[in-house]
Image (cartoon, rainbow, N blue to C red; front, side, top):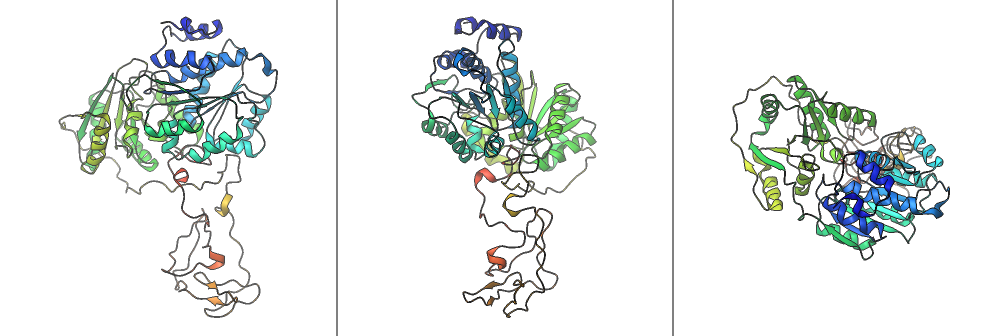
Length: 506
């Protein structure tokens, strides 16, 4: 089958041909006709099989053929993605495929200034690619009109579930017209995806071109069992002895990515880290250097690497195994894309054996273990493992269109209102009870073990309490600690490790 057999417009066929494509992949052949026919689609395929073109090409055609849209600036198609990198990748593809069409596309995500995006939306667009947090920010500010959306795409749906974006997705769906075409694409195809699909897909066409959670056939998988403290030395040995020119290395945490990149640099290996604490400019620069072979090792967190499209990437290394087995499929899917071959190497320490068993259970096959080679112990800086970096507050972060202090965190401390009353005394007008004290129903001060000298609570620059309240003691100041947050425990969607500036950062 050829692309010309799918019923695409000549302008799209010309753009596809210029990119060097002649025959559609199985996922493209299965979904493009259904989307052109206006059907809802639930599609599952491993990464690197052409999912982006599978929905971008037919959407561009339907937008072109809709002659009734006039010149209204509001977008008519929306693609929702979990990460900035994936959003930018889809936007680039849409621009390329639509080169000969009179359509406008725009991309919005967090981590960059919101004002240029507002200006772009005011000029108008037909296709909008967005991450959830920034999309909702723009909507709340009245800068985005979604009432004309006729096609909605949820890409990387499995990752949306893992990152706790379901509440945000529900909010987005409420902003869309009830009558629309819905498309859901996912690299892995678990039962949770089907459950999500039932919420908003209507009689969808199911396209599943590979078995669930299958890895790319052309990926050679292997593992080394190595002590944790020796991993960095083994990785440097593999890169140097194998003369690797390009390797994507996965760590679990942002701090771990920074630390490993510094250690590899000290060993003479050009390295860079990419994660959510990096500015968007730094992430773009690191990726460009990696693609241009100016950086040998790109050390990334799982979420930040989602959406990275690097042609003919030869090597992927799991420096640390992922906590979620399905993430292993996503990681090694960065190599062996579009029919190419690649190698995926995992460095497994003894404490990661349970994670390895979970991965092999998911794959339904063992990963080949390779004998540990002799490798030198290099002089690399050792930093204490501080664990994952502190999570961000869910409120909008600076640079994401908000004030950066929603929820009372990070703002200026309130000035004291006169001297504090002594323990056990009723505070006079204008005074506040001491930390660790509260009020009884009649207004008296209830004591609960105020901090001793030298132990007074203090708030650091993020507004979080650094002291420890005595067990069982009620909070003062109306039930709130100094600089505290009355929201209660964070939900899954608010924890660190995400992507979208102001909602989650990867």
